[in-house]
Length: 127
Image (tube, rainbow, N blue to C red; front, top):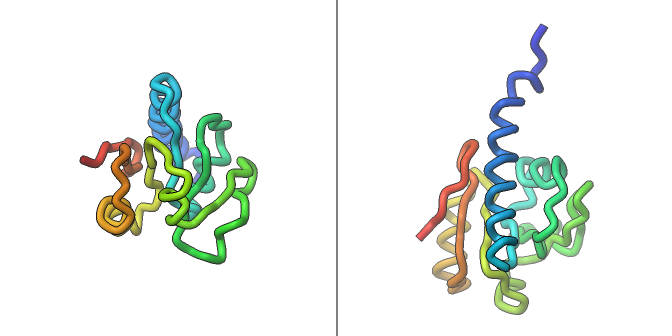
């Protein structure tokens, strides 16, 4: 019989490959990276592999800030951290809030670095 994990496995493999490609390219170019999103999806992606060049995880939920992601042990910080300790690129892994987060990055926070979003099983750069 087929388990839920077997059904999800091909998609999950593509997500992990897309993230590996994104983080590897950033490292190759000497760019620092943050992930925006400490949701179930983001925390799962972060826990499934060792990602060496993520500086921190951003999340607007104050109750998550100051804590660490399970398994990967990345510090979760508030959006204001981007103004104090900026990174070159932000990867958004928050499917329900992607548009809102991108708008906050560009409009409210005036973040001028690279922004990309995880959509389904691929990563899309945001202008």
